[in-house]
Length: 415
Ligand code: HEM
Image 1: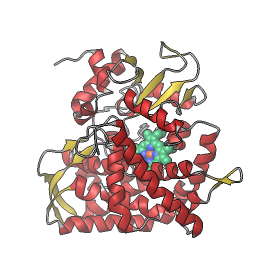
Image 2: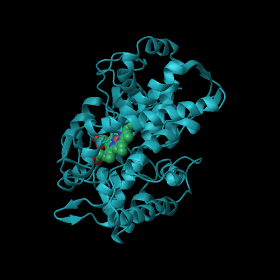
Image 3: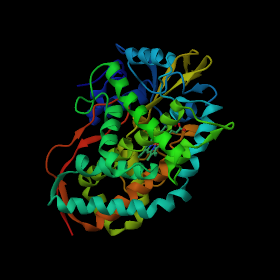
């Protein structure tokens, strides 16, 4: 059935639309071609402009004085945004890097930045390889059949990130549940409840956990990232409770579902493209390129938003101060102006100027870590994987924000 531009636009505010990727991409392709900056007026949402072309998204992200993150960083229902405003007035507020603009953003980003530079990441490499081996060994224990998404992909990146923060392994299951509740809030399988209050309760649980952690690391600093955050000084003062907890929240959550969706989606892409799997096995030197192609292919972050600080024009469309744009990364990453055969999974794609990590001052802080994790897992898995096939139908998360494959039943033989 053909779709109209209006219907295509409405999909961007519909979590279920993201669980049906062929249809989603039909809509995004239509928008890129016919209405690349398109006003979406969806019930329950404040109107926004959907920006679907690669070049326009870069234009917005490059000009961070004109396009602000703070007023409306991600898409949320009006009721949620209203509740957030009320809570903020009482001092309960998530204020992470993605909610900030300069000058605060620059200062707060610098606190964590050293921990995520490629050099620091190389120091983490052996720990990450050890975790990758642990999970491939676990696949061997499962005896040739598993749900790769829930039994492998979901755990491995969380363990990496929580190890980096320095949390005890006994707390990992609790963090897993909370990150899924926070980011999978639109999916009936993971959400805690339907209301804005339910979603805020998840945030408050996060805050409570991390407040205790801050107190512990201030009393007894260690060498981990949690200590760096707890003891960081801005203008000679430590971060306050909300700022510290927000830092943990962004790292524990942004570092998790994103990478796990890419791990699952990456293996799915290789199963669906056996020629590319064979190519990668023959030439493991292609793995770094293949990892970026997996990230482009999956694009686990579906959107971030920006709000105009002054009246402006974007690709011929007038936008007034205070109005918001939604940056559609899945669309940018299939833009036929930028990618040759964008709907082909090409394990050796080079160049690959995908925008899955965003662009500009908010460019993903964990990009080097995410690449290293993906490389370590597939470097461990592929040489041991004699055969792999689907053992059932994969399922995708219903979300408008972060997600991908949530169930990937596979049958395999490991060496
Ligand atoms: C920001 C994607 C993994 C931490 C972002 C942004 C995107 C993104 C699209 C926003 C960029 C923008 O607004 O221009 C991804 C993808 C990942 C991934 C696709 C995995 C494949 C990670 C990991 C971490 C992480 C492993 C580690 C902790 C962050 C942080 C920010 C961020 C802290 C906020 C940066 C800022 O606002 O300055 N990520 N991410 N991400 N990501 Fe990632």
